[in-house]
Image (cartoon, rainbow over all chains, first blue to last red; front, side):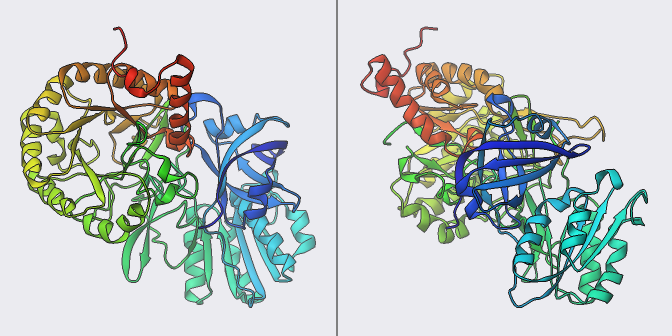
Length: 275
Length: 291
């Protein structure tokens, strides 16, 4: 059985890095040492009985000394409460949860493509891949320059960085996935990892499937128990020719892009935040 | 049972999911997620949403079906030292009967809980529990299909739950458990559509506790069989309320989402309460509320 802890973490810092996006640094040795890129923690965002459901957050980074970070956008009640926690406060956490990204030691050329807050798990993954001496090409997408994160750090650390913004205030004007075909052509990746809005992930899958490039996507879902028991967070996937229901919390959140059933309509879809 | 704390069906999967987080052997009993004869996919997502001090859910009884449960999950459960109670649902009396007959063959199952009123199934057949006569019909038929202890789970969405309880007792129930979820609806004011894909769902959590306590109080005075109380229990004090109004055991559901160790904390909390008040066992407080 994988290591999972029901424990507390001490808040070290909580900073608004760009408008509406916070980076929360937590100290918890058990979770920090056990966690892998692509996994998440399930955080109780407030005291008492008004917060029944925890909220899941990808692990964003860890420092090797017992601390790790989550990066989150304020979208509803839980994230609003979390944005107000102060250093030295204690948070209740369950984690690390999930399957994590699969890293193939034999692969050298890797593309990471990120849309918006999808950057959260990809930085942890990038750290891991870079320490394994992989050659990285990163495609970074954001609404505008005011929401762009890590472009300077990534430019320094990776082989090639593409930037796209919806409003054109930085880099290419348009969806970041528009740049993927060119990136694939130039970089010739052996694997693609993607995290971001579903519309983006669907297009990433189409691009990579045509070229048979192994691709993993990191999904999210409204969750209940977060440990695989309640079946709130299911998603239809194709396995062995059948359509089955996978639990995004423990069977994911990382999936082989070819397995995911990307629909136009919102059957088994929906990530409306709690308000 | 080594203590009066059980898991509420649907919130604890089949136990395996929580086994890395708590010691299953410490539970009074483990009630698994509802089983149906055939595999069910359940409802589209979103299946859950948070409400003030509660949650609305509409999972739709997704489960792998009884046969696969027996083959894939029962051996794991049986390897533990905790009574296993199989919760059963169906779309017709015959489905319930067949399910009971199948489970009756399994020695590892300590009891069967009949889910006759889950609000999250669309075919209309699941509302047996809202009519005393059809509830009695199902219980009667199931009674003939199994010798195992038969617990009937009652819905609160009725006008007179005590009457319903009396009818199922007469039909052969060995115990009743209540309450199941309350019907509820949440609308997203940006999309104008329900927060749950299926629309109406079941409300659970702290918000329903006073409704549940009142109903347990009513039912415990109306029947002679044991009453298992549940509905919004998050700590030992909540649990004690149910025991004081006549429940002989309690179940913990939604609280497991707040904290996966809730069951264990409540078991310990009840012991602490008894010790603190000078009682030697739970039996001394059952039904002792002066209402």
